[in-house]
Length: 460
Image 1 (cartoon, rainbow, N blue to C red):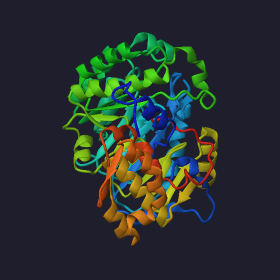
Image 2 (spheres, rainbow, N blue to C red):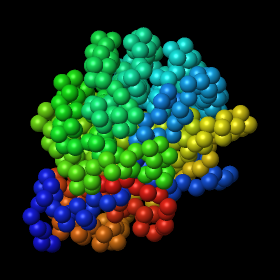
Image 3 (cartoon, helix red, strand yellow):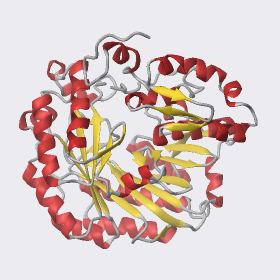
């Protein structure tokens, strides 16, 4: 295909037009919009009895104030009693797994939200002690216990508590340091607050500190983004997650409070993303893919070099475990047999746990074909290549025959130089890394055979 002159960061208008639209992020396969209501035939948790290691995710949905950009499952409240009673239900749900999961080490624990540090130090201890009565928690070397925190409300005393409880990775929601951008999203957070917490966390022995940033926010521009990145780089976080702001006010009521006229255009957003990758790369950060960056010595970067990266519902991860158990409203769990997800709304979650011990409402039982395609998509997303001979070993069928339709879908990407192939493998090129979601989507049989109401985020 003949390309015209590149316009943004080496990406032509044609490439952006063809490939930068909505596409799944593949934090799971099949994607969560495919999950079905659970019935007696769908019990993917049965596989938890035959695992050697486990990851835990705990969803704490509470926040003290509303951030207009947020699309998370959250509850805005100043009534702490809601959180305390929620914790009772969450631990009751955890006990439901007591006789369903093998007693194996928890190699990865993540508290997300919402704002997990909304919990008091006492309740944080109660949570970890309660989980420790059910699951085999072994904080220390070789495991990753992480927590998301709002730097506007996190106290130094809580950092002490978290370290005592075994947490060794801290994720701070920075988003942007520009005051006008912060006002437009109702999230005022000074660089001094983030600096104090970063220094204090390192003094207390947190091994990895991550910042969450967002581009495409109202009132953002290239200049303000570069200014934010300069301040971030002065603090040298170990990891950076740079997310694209997806404006979906019909789905997320809080976003209706944002003035759409202040949101950067699609072209400006692409320019921001490319500039940020270049900026961070010049500072020594490795671009792991999509929205994740890490300093070379960080475990995530090491895993990328070793070909050990995985993806889960938090994005790129080490996730060395055989299964993931998600606790709390909207949490998703995974085993080799499939997925199951909890009810979203707090009232419904509470009622379900009270009545039957768990709150799962929908899920997916994996077929052998699902498992093959899950592996293929993970290889492309995490290792930027696909071993054809391994596919043939797994299927007993020549690669070009088994994936005939998929190769037809990939033809434009071959012609555009996003991927290339030889007899043994398909490889994503440097330019193709920007569109790896599109490459992976060619192997998503459900995306090409079933209708869905899901609205995916844009690739660029």
